Length: 417
Image (tube, rainbow, N blue to C red):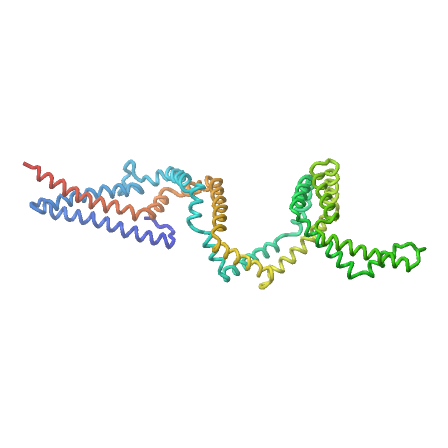
């Protein structure tokens, strides 16, 4: 073999190949030596000579067959020899078709993924506090470095030239109406209403003077102060009572009226042209306002700075939270077979889709790489991987040839007159 750069694994293959080639060649030499020694001998040695002759012929035939795959035997350009150097491109395309049809298939990829039990092993790995913490630190560091590489000009360009024009052109009324309808139907807004009325009641109870002062500022100047105080006090009491009723009564008319209002608005945003037009006008006015981009950039800078600081701090709350959630995920993946099954199904489908979609584009790498090799280099590389096993053909040819020769000589003797 010519000198080529070998990895450690290839070097081990080379040593195995050379060792088996010496064994096969040694058997051929041994058969030839026995044949010469027992030539023209009678009796038992005649049987040995016949076996040695057949073994030698079998060894030579298989040596020729194996050698002819990769080079011309003894350098003689015999037709139909050195097949690999001559047919490497044909072999490459055949191998490419074989790999595409049998390995780069979605079903094969899915089965391999499921058989590898990746989800459970990932859960076991994440369940180790050291591993989850290390992954959290690596993830945080990666995100922090990514944030430092985001240029403000790129963000502004994205907002002004991509996001804003797209949002202006895209109708949002139907989507907003559908979303608002879902919120009202599910009662999600009730929690927000509770917060408002609770905080309003608390403020009224704790700030009666402020409330009365606001009312007093709007009282008629010709009215005596003591009358204004009585009216303001009464209004405060009624406001506290009314807010308390709204807070405590889930079926209060105000709550029902708010539900009806939001439900009507959701319907109008999807069906009423006038409401839809007004909503789109408000949206466009807001998005095209000169201050919108500056506000978005200010929000981005504040968010980026806060995130970067939290990600860079070794024991920040964010890092601790990431590590905690990763470990919790690992615990669930180990303890919940149903969750593992769902993850396996979804990831398996994703892997299968990726292989089905892009597998045909990956397979040509085989023919492209082999096409860059010259014939001799291709033969050397292929022989390095399969040459050791091919030497067993020579060994088997020697042994089987010898046995066949012994059987033929024996039969010929038995049939002789």
